[in-house]
Length: 109
Length: 141
Image 1 (cartoon, rainbow over the protein chains, first blue to last red):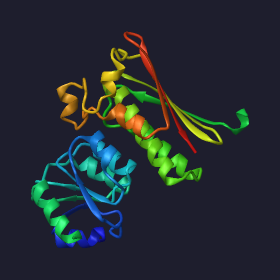
Image 2 (image 1 turned 90 degrees about the vertical axis):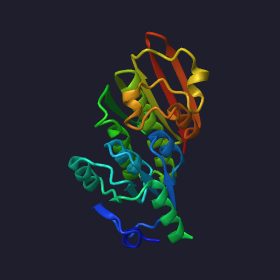
Image 3 (image 1 turned 30 degrees about the vertical axis):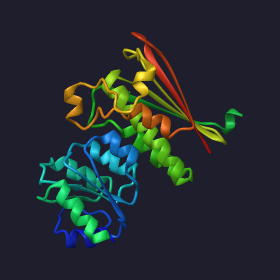
Image 4 (image 1 turned 180 degrees about the vertical axis):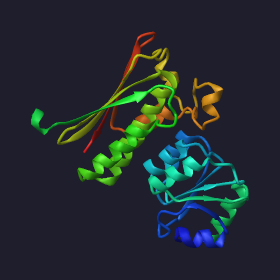
């Protein structure tokens, strides 16, 4: 499913949309960066509560189709700006990581 | 032979988490421009990022050198940090000596060195407590 369709179906807040046509066929959740770096695959939407600048490095290095911030975790405007600069899809939702993964799982099932 | 080697040098600044990963992201772009296969680029970038972060967290920075040969890519990360007293322990997944303030940034999973080993074909660690650490990683093309 495309990132833009997931945004629509899960009613996600768009912080930065670089490429809504990226294909997502799985998900990954976790907040420990090296863990995500080692395990997430480039077709997975990453759900996390981490919002510091290093999430962009992980997303960029692993070519993740989108980073989805759970529970409306606060994110600094300069990080959103950096996501735009690095062309990373950055999304947000008030829902918990669990609820988002369940929702994503249902969409991809 | 030297004519066939491309060399790049990066400085990794200690304690700077906002620009940590910069060298890896640059290397990723560079390798893409050179037409290196995506899977190789991904492995080099991950291994280098982990090494870079390690130097930022533990060693107050260091240097990263990338050497591109016709048949391999070599990454050399060198620092003058505290050294690794027990390499076997440091290689265990989940083992970390990162302080709490670093963990709150999402680091300290204890996956850095294991990831570096997993994504490279060869990894050599030269370390001396109180002197520093040099990690040499090779990825075959």
